[in-house]
Structures are given as structure tokens and as C-alpha cells.
Image (tube, rainbow, N blue to C red; front, side, top):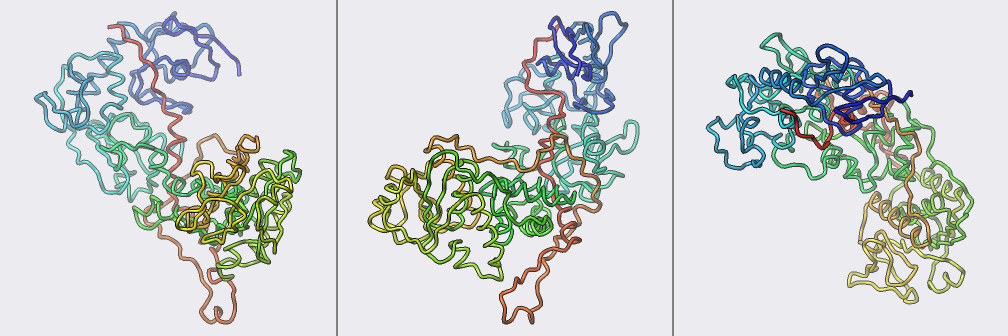
Length: 587
């Protein structure tokens, strides 16, 4: 990329030839008023006209969102003449938009639900607008300056739309900037929303005038993300602001104790990239084939699709992609223990196996698992029936762990931790399951419930170098909770042994571009697919799996029900403004 220099309001800005003036300015922290612009859009159309700037040596003004930069270009953004032009544009735009809040001398003091002293209708007050304080129109007016309006406000007379559980549309506040339409059609390819009618009757809504729930809208929230005003809002974020927007939006991911990126792996399924989908799961859960069969799937309980009809069958899709990937074993790493440290893990349940995986693969420590029973697997081996978790799948996962260099000693009950330290182990992790019989020679503290006392953050017990996790510390945990405990233990033990504690993995490249999903007809009407099961006669007298797994057609159809709740955060990068410090405008 060729680097060039331009000047904006006396400030030199280094940028590239591929940029437009608005993008170069915002990259440099210089605010140029804009409402319709999107970064990296192929053909900006300058709908709002507020980004008009003057280029030295040219007549008139140009829109900064569409004008390419050129070397040595001198741009004037904040002049009295330009802001006068912008005020004229604002006056026309605001004739059909409530504007009492934009010209009120008290507007900087008002907060939601404050008492409004202006003699205006309740629906025109800034304190009753859900976007008050985070409205990009307010931001533009603050820069340009607007002391009064030559036109009185005329309401468009739209009814606020609340016909779905996710998005509230108030077209009385819409400024027809077109951001939502362009993201929907040009970027994501849903073709679910559009400009409807013409002239003064123009409004944005479901394509062909349909309600969103009938238009093919997936309710991903991307339109809300780019809306500069209060015309589009998340229903639960209207008046009570989300403390964590990602957690509130991508509920499946954040309900998972290990934060599996559910929308990402389902998107790979849609693309029939099953190996990549499994890799996404294994980035957080080493034993994806086991997880796909026995996970308690808290992600499904939290799935936003459940607010519409039924949650996406996430665990069934996980099994579907494992079976279709042809890879039922974890991605292998180095078998060389280069750290020079040894770790003993007592217990081979989900927590113990997970800790061993990360300490061997990421920490490069020599790990030995001690299991008192004849077979490794803990509760997965002893309590989960084979028709739910076939033993060949469990055994394959355990064998793959051995290929990482982990040594598993069965029929090896540990009676003394001192002996382990005498054998030059540098740390010990107790993953001995619920209601354990703890030998007295372990010399560790237990509470009244016979659970091991360990620091909730580090998982270290009162004895130096001895850590504990899983059921032995908290009481009964689900499979995925035990995996989360094992991850936490691996981080803490690696730190203790002088490592970075970084167990994060990227097993398939993260694509930076915004995925083009394409249209999904009848999205809201698609029903959850039922898991095929073996006929009752075939269930008698054997331990074969009862649930047979999704067929290609069922898996493909179920994956199409995912709302893609993470898309909005990728789309957010296109919004052509940020919380830059706004210079005081020239009158």
C-alpha cells in the first residue's frame, strides 16, 4: 500500500491511497460529521451530506465519505461556511424528526427519566428517547451547532413496531440514512429489509413491506448496531443498558463455561467445512467427540432463538460436525516436554484429562495421570452408559492424549503426596471426583462437606504445590463445568511452574472479513429438527447408541436456524465514527 500525506484542518495525516477522506480522518482521530457512512463499503452514496468538506484548489464542496484521498491534499472540515451548509442540511433532515432535544439549552444535563421542562409532547422529549446520550445525531449537532429550527416538527405518524422478541423499530426516529439496508443487502446478503414506497412516504422496513418476522430477517442485530439514532433498538437494551453487550447478545457462547464460539462453528457447518468447525470446538474443549454426546448444553438453554420458538440444537450440531469431519481425535502437538517440570494428576475424569492436555501441549510439561481404577475416564467410564457414550469414542480420546506424551497409570491409587514430591514431581493436581476418600497422608484441609479447600482463583490448596479442582472442590459438576475447572487448573499450575499460563489455542484461522451469510428464506418459520433415534425393538438387548445423529439434510437445516448473534460485532467495525474527541466547531 502506498503511503501518502494529506492535511485536514491544519493537521498532517498519514494514510494510504485506498482510503477516502472520511476514513483517513477518523483513523487519525479527527471527527467529520456523518450519519450514513460505512467503512470499506464499495460505493458510498453520501445520503446524509453532513460530511461535506472543501478541498483547496477546487470549487464547492465534496462528501468526505466518497472522495478518495490524494497526496498533498488539503482538506477543510471545520469552517464557518461549511458548518453553515451543514446546518441547512440538518434543518431539512430534522423537519420530520423530533428535535426539541437538539436545540434545548439544557440538553447536556438531561438523563433518562429526568423531568423535562420543555413544553413539548412526551414522544418528542430527549429523556424518553432510548438512544439519548448515545445518539450520533446528537453528536453531529453538537459539532455543527444548532440554536433553533425554522420548521416545526411534523410527526411521520408511524406506529412503533414490536412484532418480534428482539428488535423495536420506531420509524418516527428514522432519518433514512440507509446504513441498515446496506449492511443487510450488500454486506450480509440477507435481503430482509429495504426502502419501501417513495417520496415523502418512504420508510425502511421488512422487504416488500412485510414485518421483519416474515421477511427473512435473522434478528442478528447488525441493523441495530449501525443505526445512528433510536429508530432501531434491542428490546432488552432500550431502557436498561446491557452491562456487557457481547454477553447479552451472544448468549450461547457466554453461557458455556468454557466459552465455545458457537456461532463460528455453526457458520462453518453451513459452509460444509466440518474439520474447521470441530477445530473451533477443540479450541476450548479438547475432547469434542465426548462433549458432543454428554455435554449438558447450557448454551442451548440460553440460545436467543428460544425467545422466538425453540433453541438451536447446538449439541446435536456439535455431534453432526464431529461425525462429518472424519476427525474424532484432538489436534496433536509436540510430544517433547521441554519445560523440565513434572506434574502428577490424581484422577482421570474430565477435569484431570483436560488439565493434562493443556499442561502437556501448551505448557510442555511432563504429565503423569494416576488412576486407581483399571481404566481411565473417571465418571465417563463408570457412570455414563455406553448407549450414551460409546467406549470406543472415549478410548480414542484418551489414546490421543497419550500421543501428546501424557503417561496414564491405571490401578495406581496414590496414598501419599510426599512420595510424589520425593519422585521429583513439581506440582500435584487432585481431580479425584465427588465425595472422595482423601487419604490422611495427603495433609490437606477439607470442609464439613468433605470437599477439599482450595483457593477459588488459583485452585491451590493450603499445601504448596498441590492444586485441586472439579467435583472434589465444588461438589457435583457437569461435564463441561469439569472441563472448565481443568482449564483453570492448567493455567494456575503453568503459572506456578514458571510458565505464561496461556492455554489459548487457535486451531483454525480466524477470518477477519465479515462473512456474507446470504438469504435464508422463511428464517423465523424454520422448526427445530428432531434427533433420529433407533427403533424400540433395536434398543433391547444391546448398548448401541439410541440417538443416531443428524443426517446431512437435518444438520444443514438445523444450522440454518442459527441467528448469527456475533455478526453485529463484526459489522460494528464498519461504523464510520468512534468516540473521538470532538473539536469545538467554528460558527
